[in-house]
Image (tube, rainbow, N blue to C red; front, top):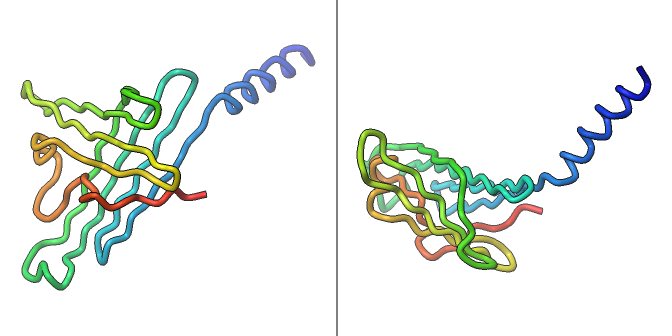
Length: 133
């Protein structure tokens, strides 16, 4: 019984040691973007969520929130791409994520507009999401 318990504890600890998650956030006025990059072994999972309340320059616009997640592919040392298919379509939303020393910059393809409405978007507009330490 002790051997089984030891084996289960060792397996849980070894999996936790191989898992790593980084969080990034950008607050731009009333717009909040959050990025999570989770690495488990050779697999990378990305989750992006946005919550936008209208800024003063966006009077009359509606608040919105959206999220997108899935497995991402590394295309360089500090760059990865999240590719998500639009339901029932042949189109794909591509979010290009460029990592910097202090954060990440996001750029979305036009087809990502199927996942967001109104003033929401996944792109950071050239601004850097700051890595949370």
